[in-house]
Image 1: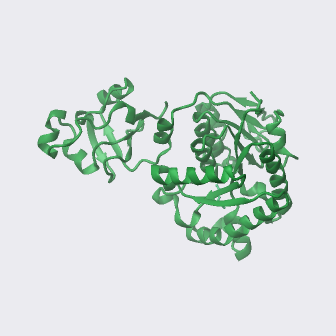
Image 2: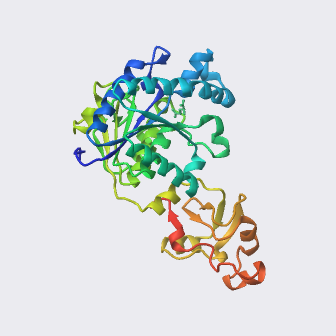
Image 3: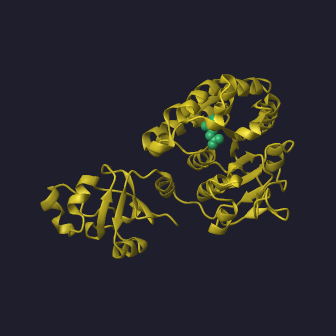
Length: 366
Ligand code: GLU
């Protein structure tokens, strides 16, 4: 379970609280991370870092109270803080004779196949050169509201680990492990050593999104673990302040919580599950049953269409599945409830006769 001898590609996520000390960035901590990473790289492994801290560093520099700042102010802080953050990484890696690279991305970049492939190719090239890519969200150009942002770097790190086929994702945080209940409220909370399946009960014990416990981010970390586990990646959640934490984890020491992958989903299924939907198609019970039996979605089962999307986009089917649609939202509104044989009369020749074939439909609870 904890044997990482053959784990070649390692993603490491480092949170803002873990990186900072006394309201500023902790240069010594980053140096220790760089030292541990350089050992791994020298031992023939490939390491990708996903870092937070840009907003925090920018806020410190501009003397802005970030807790009351709105989105645009946070974006401004990120723009100021990101080069400062990278400069700390560069100085730290210099000490160990390694180069690091800045890679900024948005959810859109990962959702579109071409930009995703461009990203993958450039990261593969960096890794071949022995460079350590340091990734962060491009906070200035993305916001949650318009669905271009990841929401948090936990999710970003999981998607990166998944899309880059990492063998292990290490999430470094300021809590020792996942607990069976909130350790800040309950003295008898016990750490969970290993998770084999991320069930609803585990998600619940990690706290709801807005709760005080979730400010430690445990909920988003467990959700992230689920994404990475679906890619066949093991996830270790541990306290970043444990001495030599990365080296110890890779050596197989029993620290933090390990999440074991259940199975490795195909690239296409993972891509569909992790893509943001641009609309929702409401389908009737018969159509839900049909897609569960791996049948195509026909226009007859469609009750309503919401959102504006094109053919080829990813859309939700009720709340049960994600799908690549063969028709745009305008076209679907015209053929909803109709028989497939009527499609060509309504929309003209050259159209597909089903809304989506089974390989383009993935149940959320896959
Ligand atoms: N991208 C943000 C930053 O660099 C962090 C977001 C997060 O921590 O989830 O400050």
